[in-house]
Length: 188
Figure 1 (cartoon, rainbow, N blue to C red):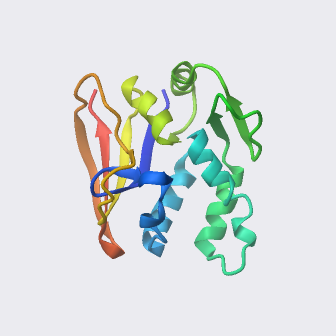
Figure 2: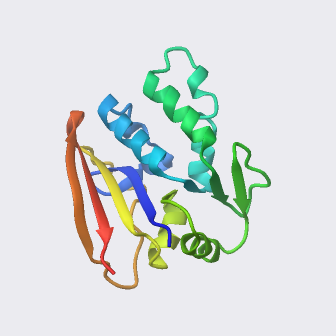
Figure 3: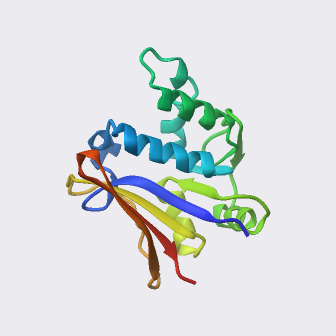
């Protein structure tokens, strides 16, 4: 069975995006934090995206390594992003591109099938898609990079659940700018 990891930057009050899908509060990240996320992406064999996060990522990373002033870490991230197989879950997209398979049907059924298959770790991104995986009990690990900012509303990292999920702390680390990373494993 494959491990499924949900990780994102979020505000201290628990949002991955402020109202209006604003993520400006999160960046630019410190070089150290960016490298940590790069290492996580390199360790993933498959990246799973919801439509909104896919549109954000695919609008920048396919050519980010060719942008003036791109750092070595950004160049590495862009190349890794293009090379890593991806699955995008959407009922409105008709194509995805960039080493990506599009799933338009039952997301939980496909997530379950992927999780039960062979292979290495998978990462999942996007609040709606990850929320469905949380409610289905499919998330094995959470990686939360909490930024010292309050936005008062927006898109929450965690979804409403039907029952409690107990977690075990795996790692805590502080990055420049007061960003605190915590990783938790789901206790089953």
